[in-house]
Length: 289
Image (cartoon, rainbow, N blue to C red; front, side, top):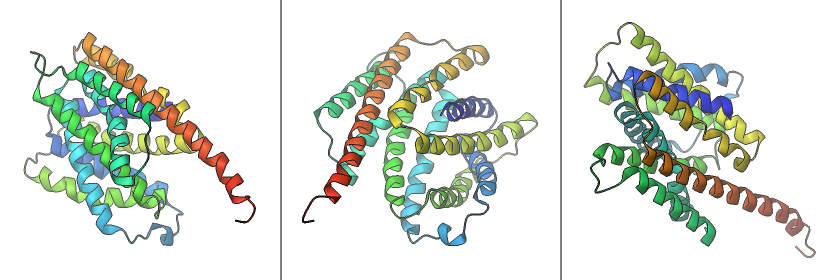
């Protein structure tokens, strides 16, 4: 999880550097194109039968929403202070909880709803609607978080039928042409070091996703989630060193509230998952069933 966090933090810095010369649409395309090239070797040895799917329409919808989320998130990283953009991206689990109720019919009880409400207080602290510091850019960052939450639910639905490798492969196969189309309208070839940043965005993004997936397989979400929060101080330090940004105390306070809310939600989900797992064997062994 720490390796994943480092990759995503580095990718945010790379996106900011690339955005100085390249349009957000182009950065998204290069991230997906080079990300696909990076993921293909990881699929070597996977039987073709495991990579087939009967859910192409669902993949199309998932990827279309994912591209919109990616474009909004990349724009936020390129135009907002890095710490603020990353802090708002941490609101995604709040929207995942809401989307799970709406689309999956999951039952969320009072304590998790309270944690979600606290998390939204943190969002308001960062955004500060009505203040002179409020900008439409913060709404774009929040849009990315909302759409990312919807995508997380769609991935959960897809994973009921398809393997993780199948989901990754089809996601990139859809993302590349979907991101190329808007990029063509603003296309200009990268020059010099811009090629390095373009390649790095794809490789780091894929590396972060792969490490994150393996981390969740090996450990509990509640134990791993706090490690992912290390991304915030990393990007805040990078913003201070390279982009002359200062860490706003409102952003710091709001981020702390959101992260505490996320940590509690992850803890509750882990507790409920353990309860369900321990109850399953006893139910299966119940007499007369």
